[in-house]
Image (cartoon, rainbow, N blue to C red):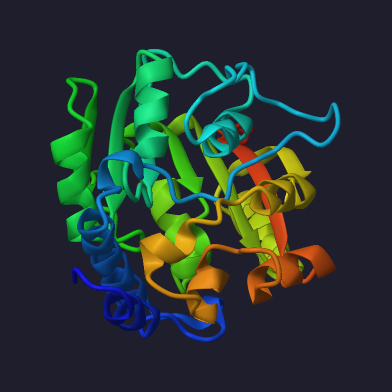
Length: 283
């Protein structure tokens, strides 16, 4: 894996030309190979985030935290805080599904006195997280978003950042989110999906007992972050393969252009699981 184009070719082979058609197995292999690639080029210890990031474009922002100047991966950190908004996660159990290289989970664990459990299908990403993000308040597990390796009603919030588009079965995923949530738990969801898929997510969440409290289109903010994307991606990924450019949503890539055209919407949905209503008995 040490030399130039071969690792990138192997990595990109696991991604479909249409990124959203990539299979679960393809994603798993891609992320395992990505972990090896980041180690090979010497940037593993600084590559905690894979999300597209968020740049404020107006005053319509929801983060309760200020990102200090000079913060490393500031746009990616800001996306985490935007999806959390003003929620207080102190003394809560938070599960991140699709934790990747642990940056989102670590951000939550450091900002709040919360117990964070990060779950990802990539065994190599989880091995990296267990080695790198060490702390009593954070745990990592290998697991499938469609079969989460946790019991029922175990958490107060589920965090899912830019991952659900790769699952291939939104109904099963949302059912698993419902299963692990306690009453009044929050589902903090942000991703790029088609408008039709977002309509389905809203409908399914309502059927599962969630109330959508916030529903916000942040596509412009994410595109602004992609416009600032670093030009060193060729060094990391090995070449200018269009599938990798698509994975990174670089300007001019298919994913970038679909978001720009409104065919994909990058949204934040913040939903809370309500207590079941009981009908009054008649006597």
